[in-house]
Length: 238
Image 1 (cartoon, helix red, strand yellow):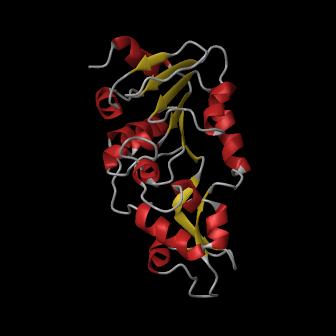
Image 2 (cartoon, helix red, strand yellow):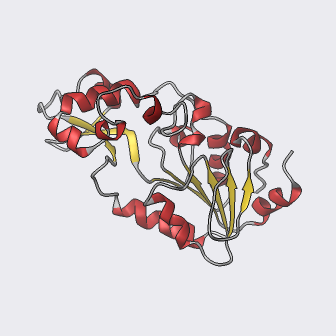
């Protein structure tokens, strides 16, 4: 059961922002990146996994990039779990925003109303030649745009690419206005996402729900618990 003081934090918050990472989606069957079962840890390829997710790989070896993405990144049958669903409910019933590093589209499937996809979305695919959007199912059949022959790509931020300025500004706005910041499923070690916490105000309460202990230079509440159990117990009170 959730401590009443924790439930009260959510009930009394005026503006909530959830800062989330890959750990949110592991319960939906999508591997994270750096844990013992993560994509980067278990990768047996010739080069580091980061290379296959880089702008250099897309430019220099587009077929290699495509095969890696197709084989390792797409889980179209995955369904949102209770973490996605409860956070989505907060955005529907309360003044809440989800800012996520995840590119798996599960927050969209859950009906999240106010969502910032900090690193983009795998299921938004476009042609690099003519810039037209393409259904991801077409991309999974071929890396070439059938209309113009251009090479398709997902609209995600690759290593070596800059972030979407709109995603940055929306994220900073959400954090700077929040009086409750909830960190879930992320170590908050990967920048620039981790730097978003620096935009909090002095009166904001920071809560971290994670099985791994997090460390910050400012006061925060750490809940070392499986986030699925936590959000299963948490009530979304309007």
